[in-house]
Each structure stands twice: as structure tokens, then as C-alpha cells.
Length: 395
Image 1: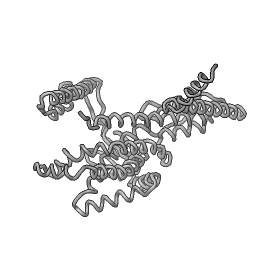
Image 2: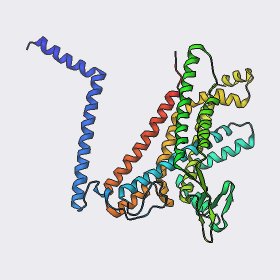
Image 3: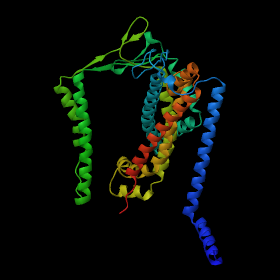
Image 4: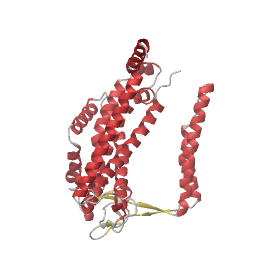
């Protein structure tokens, strides 16, 4: 090899290392190898320690009989069910309280966030007190407050508070009438699905027409007719196949109907009100981010304050609100694990019982991690999709 060839090869190697793409690729490969090596060491160390402690590894225990009851079972479960079924019940309870909490926290958060910008001093002051109070209290204390400070001091079932529509509230939870549907009611559910699909098709068709011709056709009432009217008509034609099981007061308890236990109520209300205080600040910041000229232009067009907020300000504020709102949804989902403190049978509570009975700590913790990771990725993916739909499209 001549001196010129050697110099050229050395120069090529130096040039490749100076290329940011090549350098970044090399760093990523090194990091992946390091992570895989650490993971292999961790697995090997865990297996060796479990062997020394005479603890059998693997997930075979999931098919064994659980042998314990669960207070709230949204799906079929008995003490004779398997550990896997018990963990599935816990995961389902986690999803239920997370989804319902997100819905209520969003509603309360938007109301409080808009109220913080109210011109009324009392409304603005009360909203500020709410936000500053809940934002500075640990969520566990909020859960304990609702459980021991609110629900536990309610009267017993014999003196339960009678609510509208035949519902009762006591220290044993909320008991409401339960709807019992006949099999033919499935037709109305199918009609509801068709109505939703039809409204989506109609909205997309009108959007295409607007982009092509500028013509705007109403979609609200046709959508209401398809989503609400069509199922009601089908339900009526099928003979209203539903009966209601109403709670009845006995000598010692309330029987019948749909029973919502106080543990769920405490966790649901605590996480909703706690997270709503953070959502309120996000909403307030999003509204303040909209330029003042937008409000002035809306006023010049004759729009009322409510119309300006609904049609001009909030749609633009959404683009600022959605990213941090996603973080609050994820926080609420992960905070459902605090239900263990009041005995709500969510994933961590049920998993702790399984862990204590089987000793499979590594496997149970791995299941916790996978489930919460899956829920977090699912929520984040949906919010990213929604954020993309709300983003401005430049031409």
C-alpha cells in the first residue's frame, strides 16, 4: 500500500466518524449492546437468587386455583377461579376507575379552568381556592378523606339517603336501579353502532364538500337522529325489552339493584377531583395562550361571550391543552394503584394477594409493569392521534 492510499483510507475513516448520522448510528448500536448485556446480567442474577431461595420461576401459577374472594367483580369470578382470572379482574377494575375518573376529571377541570377566568370575583375566588387546595395535597390523603371523612360518616343502610330515581346512598356505597335487558335488546345496540358509523360518514362527507365547494351543511341534528333516534325507534319496535331491578330496604340492608361500593366511590371521586385541579390550570393556560385579538374580532362580529369561548377561543386553546392533558391522564391511570389503601380491588391490590399466596414476586411485578405500560401506551397513543386531528393543517 502506498503512502497516498494509506492517507486516503485514514481520511475516509475520519470523515465517516465526523458524519453525524454514522456517529449517531454507532452510538445507538453501542447503547443497545450495553442495555442487552445489562438485561442478561439482571435476568441471570434473578434466576440464580430464586434458585438459591428454592422459589420456582415461571407463570405456571396463573392456572392454579386462587381460593380468595374479590369484593367487586365486573366479570365472572369465584374463589375457585384461577390466579390469572383474579389478576384479570384487578386489571378490569383498574380500567373502569381510570376511564370513569378521566371523564369526570376532564369535565370538572374544564369548568373550573374557565371559572378561574370569570369576571365574577366570587366564582373566580372559589375556583382558585379549589385549585390551590387540591394541587397541594397528596392524592393518598384525598382518597383517605373521601373514604373516612365523607363516605364513612354517612348513615347505615337502614337510614340510607334516598336520592332521585330510586337510588340510595349509605356508608356501604351507592345503590341504584339496575337495568335488565332481554336478548332482543341487542338489536338496539347494533342500531346504535350503525348510527355512530353513519354520523362519522356524514361528517366526513360534509367536510369534503366544504373543502371542495365551501358549502357547510348541518350535521348535528342528523347525527343526533342517527345516534339517538334510530336506537330508540328500534328499541320501541322490539317492545322495550328491559326491566328495572329497584333497590329495596330490608330489615338490615338494601337488596337488589346495582351496588357501587364505597371503596370505588372514594377512589373515583378522589382521583377525579385531585386531577381536575391540574387540568383546570392547563385549561386556563391554554385559554390565555390565545391572542386577545381573537376575542376582539369575535366581539366585533357580534358574538356573545359564550359563543366566543365555544367557537373561537377553546378550539384554538385545544392545541395547547392536549399535550399536558395527556400527562394528567397518565398520572390518573397510574394513581389508581393507591386504591390499595382503601381496599379497592384494583390490579395492585389483587396482585399483592396473589404474591403473598404464591411467592411469585418477580412474575407478579412483571405483570404489573406490563399492564400499566400497556395502559399508558394506549392512552398516550389515543391522545397523540387526537392531537394530530386538532393540529393546524398548513396549505
